[in-house]
Length: 423
Image (cartoon, rainbow, N blue to C red):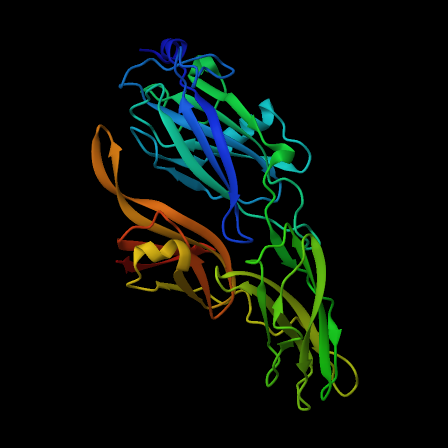
């Protein structure tokens, strides 16, 4: 069958069914659970969307899912997302630059927004009426001044699909033409101001402070909290400095920010009498112990010489060129039934501070190609700031079962894996 004939008879489309919005942890990623279906004629729960086209009800049809996210221009999304809960197949969505170009052409995003487009791996059993569900976390990005972002992260989601044949290969650039077997926007779900904002805490970068040897530096730090105050949103505070022989102390041990508030804390650093002139860093960290979520801010402490001059040069932090090394481990032997409440602690060791993505996977039996096979599926994923030398992230999930768990941490192109076992 030629591509034109295939397109006329079966332009496969995907239709939105519903969504749930929530937040991972207390101040973590905003997560959108989206439900969809392959459009089916005369199915009131899964119609033909805007294009009113349907796949031919045949197990031989091959196709690809397409999803586009209109998000805040500063928002970050992963390059791939697994979809493993469809009734008869599973697939992986992969970011696709050519789809983003077409979305920008067809539906230019509003000012301050961008399209993030995904095209799936080939689905060899493109059956109408099939239901599916997937979760898409979006990272909260601070504003230019470091404050929490009050703009909705996700404006809208579009759904589409395209055929795959011997004439129209799966790796071809996206061209939004139904006659070429592609429906780029078959359905659109607008979220806009109804989007879930969630909670966020940001520590603003403090202004540089200059303090001579023998005196105590006091660095004020502004903390901005967005969202509703809850008992879980209590942060322990700690600080460190690169000034040799000095310790950094926060004036209060904890911070419990009120709803939509601005607070101020301070970090004290007694400068040793024999301190060498130079610029040093002072870093403050706010952490929720139960979840391992952190926020940090780093300021500069200038120590002048006897002539009152601070030597030229940047802060004496480890250089960014220091090779990044990662190790990951998780507590072994925990009962799986305790993980939803007590959590599974994961420890990441790093040669320097970085933002990492930690993923938990377990084997599940899934149906693929008409039979059940065992495959590793993503159970949970978190993005976290890991401060050197190590940081802890606590996962709470009802999806973890007794058995082996693969733990993967990745940052800046570096990846490390570990393994634990739940009983």
